[in-house]
Figure 1 (cartoon, rainbow, N blue to C red):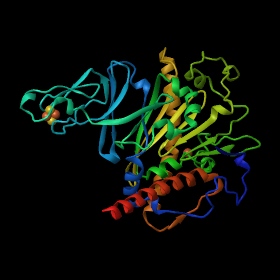
Figure 2 (figure 1 turned 90 degrees about the vertical axis):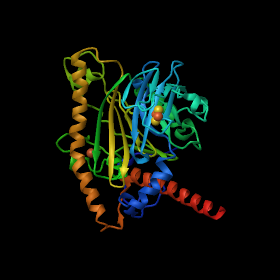
Figure 3 (figure 1 turned 180 degrees about the horizontal axis):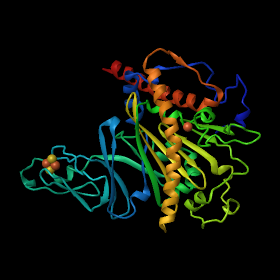
Figure 4 (figure 1 turned 45 degrees about the vertical axis):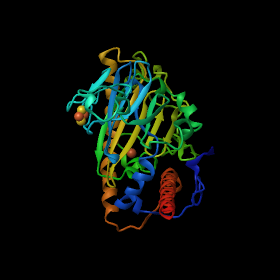
Length: 402
Ligand code: FES
Ligand SMILES: [Fe+2]
């Protein structure tokens, strides 16, 4: 682990990640041909966050999620043995999409076309006229998708034979994430949005604090303190393909009563009684390659996943995870209020991200510039480029072998 501190004192010319300081190419942020490479080199063969175990609370629970970049629909189930499994949501008879619901509880799934019925373990249980087919039922199970869990977070990998397991992929960060409240979350608030912007551009907006004072003066997201007026991060960490940052904590945070209530505290009478001042470690930001980050503070366990749809369009899933079910309407309200506040801040970002995309789409810039406070953006592009280069080399190798 390579941890740098304190970064808000970074001066011109410093190179916190050792990745150089040169301008970076603009093409990866808008070009269709580059996106095609990312789709194959990264998204179809990397562990991707897709849900949380609290969405599969009991045997028979299932969820269905679309991964547009792969034209895939993924069915994730919890069997009666408690095991979480994932499959392509495709009937093996003639390919009909099997499950139309996005979530629910079922022991089996019946295809509406010719009534082939699959158990939630993926096995074909029954098929009318099976004796007339030229295949055995045991060879007609749903196509499996690799799935695993870290810190309560469900990940899938579309590679039929992933090169590494999830634990190896995440590495030592997995243990640290497992200590965070998201691992015990029982419910969440969710906001899904689509945006006219490349997935990296969309994601990068959450990897730098440089914009806070300009884009968020109203919402107060940029609130700093006397020794760090713009709330710059305190540390950056680089962990293979992943990265972390330690968000600066105001030593005297003002936690409103409604924030404290959302976190499960009894309704305090005044700010001073809220007693939820974030500690240093609780403000850690975990960014897992390629498109997921978790911002673990004691009150709002914020996650954001940005799925590409095309080179210049993406879908973002923002969640606030909560420990403990809503025990009253007031608790629900306080949590939704937190979500609404997050949306308010995001609304301020959205227009400028899309404006950035329009500018890049023009092709006017061959390069863009990243300062030392934007080093996490540089690291993401570096890792993306490395994965694309490795994939290209594989293609060349395959070509030569033919
Ligand atoms: S396509 Fe599903 S049963 Fe025929
Ligand atoms: Fe922002």
